[in-house]
Structure formats: structure tokens, C-alpha cells
Amino acid sequence: MDDQLSRVFSALADPIRRDLVVRLTTADATVGELAAPHNVSLQAISKHLKVLEGSGLVTRSRDAQRRPVHLEAEVFDLMTKWIERYREQAESRYRRLDSVLADLADEESSRKKAT
Amino acid sequence: MRTLEATIEAVPDLPLIRISREFDATPDQVQRAHTDPELFARWIGPDSRTTVIEVWDARTGGAWRYTNTNCDGDVQTFFGSFHLVRPGRMTQTFTWGGMPDGVSLETVTFEALPGGRTRLSATSLVDSIEGRDAILRSGMDLGMREGYAKLDALLADGR
Image (cartoon, rainbow over all chains, first blue to last red; front, side, top):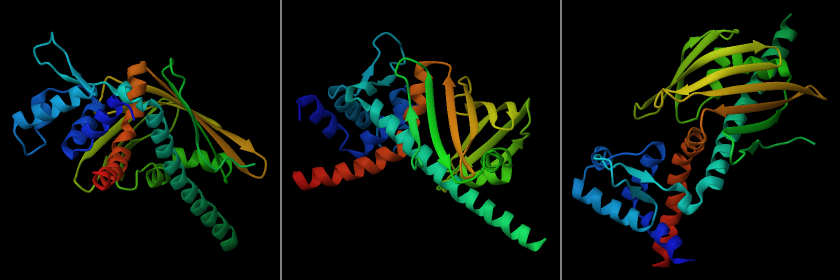
């Protein structure tokens, strides 16, 4: 395992930092926005963000006043994993559709029997 | 040979996602599960969420809107229009309420296969690569929690 990958793994070994990353998958966010759902201080969140920054997982823009935190998703090459996860979600959705269609077939055959 | 699992294609430099899947039902039945609100609400899921259809007019030019609520009361809204609905083909716009400026164009085709089966092909055309990636990333939330719970255990064992 190379150093960056182990930094990423250990950065993600903490549940709060994982929550921060999950939150950042939706959109960039400020430290305040990231801290809001957590019962910890802004300072604690900043510390966690430093660890995430150290791993290269997130960056913070220098220019903007809000200095939003940005997820550098490519760092751990999540694209393939995202796609697979998305596919798995679609597959589980279609398995539910399979069972709806099976019910539908049952309903139709019992209606045919009734008439 | 039946394709048991959904296949996916995401062209890296195009804002496109394609999914294909076969079903043991006729094209008419599979399409009805997309146009009948009662049937649709039963499978669109996910399992952990309750789907409530709020607006539903599955005709060309009609509109749709539904909400998805989990046990914590977190509500997600999705809405769009039925741009085209005809036997074998539907085109809809799709927007997630959390990103109201983002819109994707979803085309689903229902193709008859031998033995009364159907091949469903769904193409999502998103308005930007970033939007496409956001959609793909949205699938990560649950999986990440599960995946990293395993990683936690692994790290706890190893150290």
C-alpha cells in the first residue's frame, strides 16, 4: 500500500471524517455547514478537515471568503466504485421491480381464472 | 441467455449513464410498472424509504413528482415531466429537489424478447459531467457506510 493510500484509509477510519466526506459528495461546504449536524466544536471539525486535507481527499479554496471544502474524489479513484455502487443500486431497484412484475402476473392469472 | 444483472455504461467524457436489464415480463407489463403510480411506488424505493406519489400524469407532456422519506423523517423530493410516453418508449426529465437547477433527460425503452420477456434500456443524459458524477456519487452514501464499517473492523484487528 503506498503512503497516500494508507493516509486516505486512516483518514477515513474515523466515523466523523467519513460523515464529512459523505456530506461533501453532495456539494462543497463551509466548515460551519459541515459542523452543523455534529455535536462537536468548529475546532474539532477543523482538526478533522486538516487530516482529510493531509490525505489529499479534500481541498479548500484560497480565494473565496467562505473557503468551502471540496472533495477531491479522484484521489482515491472512486469513479469505478461509484459506478459499481450506482449499478448495484439500480440492480436492487430492478429486483424490487421483478417482484412487482411477479405479483402483477399472479394478479392477472387469478383474474383470468375468476372470469 | 438471460442477463441476470443490470449492466451499466458511463462513458468517461460524456455526461451519460446507460443501464440495461432484462425482465421475465412483457414490455407492456414492465412499462405499466413505470406508468402506474401505485406499481411505481412499490419498487422505486430504496427499501429503507417510503415513496409517496404527489403528482402523476403519465402522458406525453404530463408531470410527475414524488417524495421519499426515511425512518428519521428525512424527505427527498424528485420531480420532472413525462416528455414522451408511448408503448415501448418513455422520455422523462428528472430533477432531485436538493439540486433544483440540475436536470437529466431519461429515456427508457422496453424491447420485446423471445419468451414473453423484455429488455429495458435506460439512458440518463445529464447537463454536465459534474452533474453526472454527482449522480454517480449519490450512490456512494450507503455503500460507504457499509464498506467502511468493514474497514473499521479490519483496521481494529490489524492495529
